[in-house]
Image 1 (cartoon, rainbow, N blue to C red):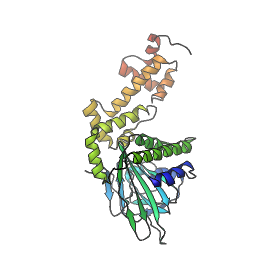
Image 2 (cartoon, rainbow, N blue to C red):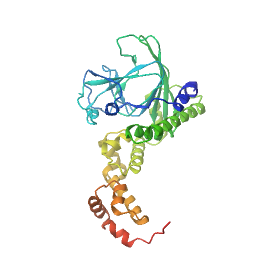
Image 3 (cartoon, one colour):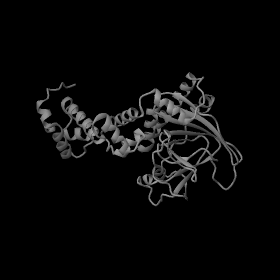
Image 4 (spheres, helix red, strand yellow):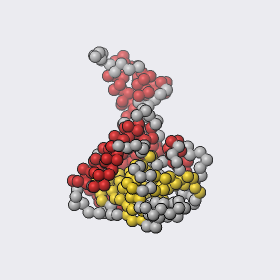
Length: 348
């Protein structure tokens, strides 16, 4: 609590450096400082029995986690390792290979966000990879963001020793959507993204402080044990995954909405999420996306004077003829028919 109130919240309020999104293609695009190394190949991520880890590579000293992780370098400096997989290469890391990994220096006062599925430093070894030893300690603050709360702890690392302190789980449902919005802003490259991202970061840390303040008696807990407990006290993991995917779809109808992107929001593979949708909703993810787009289009056609082509763009069909064909196939009538049968709309 003292670290949040005395160090991290004030630091976020006067943040000078951008928040780093530790995703290989994004780091290359933003031209962040890193060094490229060659190591043992990393297989594509495989779902394990752990509710927390997608995979662990002991030789590379990295692991991939199902959930986003927010980290702050409170004191000192570290070297952060990120592994490269085939899925990372598909995002545009030209010239890199599967057996490559990145080492990113992160200075004191920097915040960075690890997206789900990206292999990164496991925290079980020194966060220092330079030839020249570092005697001064580096202190890191970690927040693993789950849909129903967050786990936090801090650790010390020097050139000779690494110590990780106990983790605490705090129930809190406000932080997860904020982290997802933070990740989108860091990856968007839109004007004003840094300002919005900073506001999201401040909100996340403030909620974290409030959560810790409200749960002073909560005991340290192992990550897998916390997730096991959460899954038995809240909705089933399947229901939670479906709801996260539906929420993402409904708020991104204008976007391409590729299966892998939707599944990433549910922390599942695209195939597994599709099975969940078929089992629970009796439709595929793609069919759900189309249904929501058509539903939104009907509302816009009936309740606004927007041109039909613009309605199509708003619901994710930039090609007007494609929108007309899909709309007619799903509803039995062309979009223009709703305009001729709809009641007159009041002008404001």
